[in-house]
Length: 330
Image (tube, rainbow, N blue to C red; front, side, top):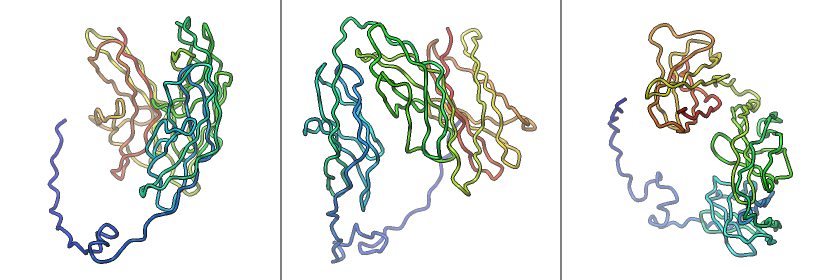
């Protein structure tokens, strides 16, 4: 579909001392802004989990600052090992030695360059190297869970097996890893989620050779909405079925439509996070369960993540469905 060029109105240039420029031009206007000298709070809840014989996964809770956090620095034995922006609350530190004890701390930083005090130091020991470990672990089984509140969920799963041993389990939300736990655990509690949101979780096992298992089954959980918030408009029960027709792969989608108080005239379909097509019904929109066939010509084995959202009766786009993953057959 061709895009539509939108002509934007010309914006007048404000004067150097315009109030619209606020603090950015106070100096030019003869005034001076008060410098931000307050340090952010030290990050809390820092954990360090060995992901393999040569890497450690470090996580922490969001810090606070009077002006706002711009990023975090992760330190190994007091030396900076990684830096991430404020949106990330985890990172992997590689290049480590097997069977070695390390300590990690995290510091928050703000736009003025202020850094927090270091977090509490967290110890971790990498496992022994496993040069004979040539097989990835089996996939975790029977992933299940519940939403404990609008911002937390609890997960549990059946353990994986490996020819040498499982080092850790990685929890993914859609296609992004958001948490890791020790290979001796088969439960996790996730925090920092949003109320009234559909989440799709999978779990992968990892061994000391840094090989990952196939995904567990996908689990959809919806966090409760905040009091007084509108009901979710996400389609539910999204299912996919993939078949081959000649050189094409056919992906048949079906889903339960949300109750929006009116007719849903269209849906947007996203593949790998990008808008692919808008589904518009040729006649009267269906009631109840809806279906759509997507035709793809990519090579066998191509992997896609897929989700949809409805166009509401007021013209706005509603909430996303849970995500589904398809692998094109050969």
